[in-house]
Length: 147
Image 1 (tube, rainbow, N blue to C red):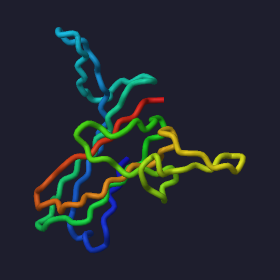
Image 2: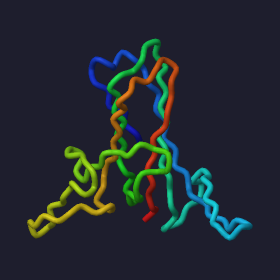
Image 3: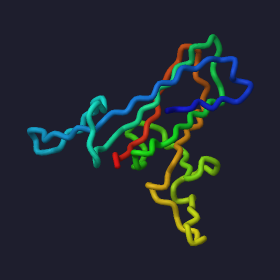
C-alpha cells in the first residue's frame, strides 16, 4: 500500500501511484561475479530480498509541485535500505517523526530509549524537490527482507 501525500494546493493535479514488489534473483555470471536481477515477487520465502518500487506519473496538465510519497513498510518485511538508483527516503519508526535511521530512537517496553534499528522502520517517505511536469513520471524504491 502506498500513500501519496500532496499539499492542499497541489490536490487539483492528479498523480497516479503504483506500488510493485520485486524479488532479487542472484545468479553466478561466467566471470565469477554474481548477477542480480529483479523479478515480480510471485513466490517468496523468508529471507528473500525484496525491492519495493513506487512509480508515479503526473496525469494533470500542469507541473505537480511539493509531492510527498509515503509508504508503510509491510508488516512481513524488514527495511534494508535504499534501492539502487533511488533517492534516499526519510524513515519513521512511529509514522510521525521522520529522519535518517541514525537520527531515530525507539522507546523500549521498560521505558528506556535506544537507537532505532532497520527492523523498527514502519514508514518510508520521499519529498520530491523538483516539480513533476505534466505527463512526467518517476520511481522511488526501497529494499527489504521478507521475515
